[in-house]
Length: 189
View (cartoon, rainbow, N blue to C red):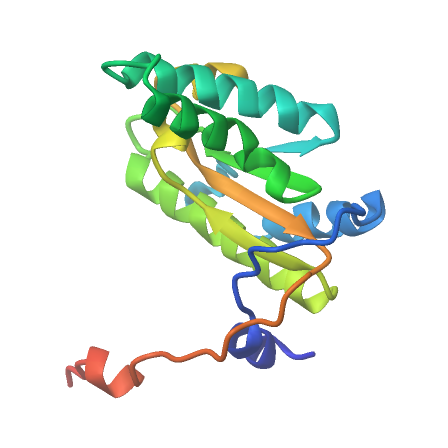
């Protein structure tokens, strides 16, 4: 499939079959991420591939981090939230956590490092789609909690941008829709 077709047909896939894709496909996806544009060629991205029991360990850490924020972690409602958080990483056979590690240099703009890593994520999502795999980028509070960042060995100066859940699709993607570009574009001449 050509790149324009991949862009227009890629959809977020949130349900996966239990069998993980082979490592060589995962490595192709990771390689695609490294070809994202990067100002000053800093390549600020870091990838963490979680399979098997590593997903359970991440779930434990995510649940602990959430529990620390709750005012009454022993209530029934809180216990249900904590248990749901613990199960989140088990929704896909493979998770790729993606972090931005901005280079500490006065000539480097930190936001550009985050943008470059975001472009790497898009490359990976498109690569997964072109290889017949499903993927979804999941973000949210779990990615920003200190305990979760520590699980990946990230410093306070690094950003966990999100989690790419990856596997063989176990759902039909929804039809895509976007606002026509003309409604979002201003031409200056």
